[in-house]
Image (cartoon, rainbow, N blue to C red; front, side, top):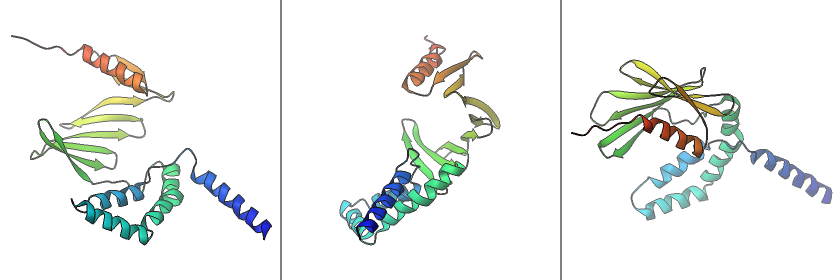
Length: 185
């Protein structure tokens, strides 16, 4: 009996090591279940009752295990999550009105509510670039380099290479704001 418990403990530790590795994935199924539960109703008591019911039937546990064992493994090996929210449309409230952001297979489509014209942000996996597509014209605005940096085209035609951290974002902001001029009358 003691030997069996040691084997069981070893098995649990090894499985735990694989489940808690550094590539944890996006947990898309579990996140969708939580999001659905939080948005059932504006009444927090209804949301709590739904949460309790889902917890009793172990829906959260099953969705988490399915993500941890199957879906996140697929995401790790293929680079895409089978539970990606392709086709989902979110409404974003901006200072100039509402915008609709639709998730595409390779990026996003952004349009102002009530207007037909859309701006698309498209990721080109082969070139490892993000492009803006507007009026049928595609313009590269970010290229990921193999050394962990990114290149940004500047308005003057030069390229700026930045690190992928807060310092890189600050450098990119500073470089793009230099060419911004305001006209006064």
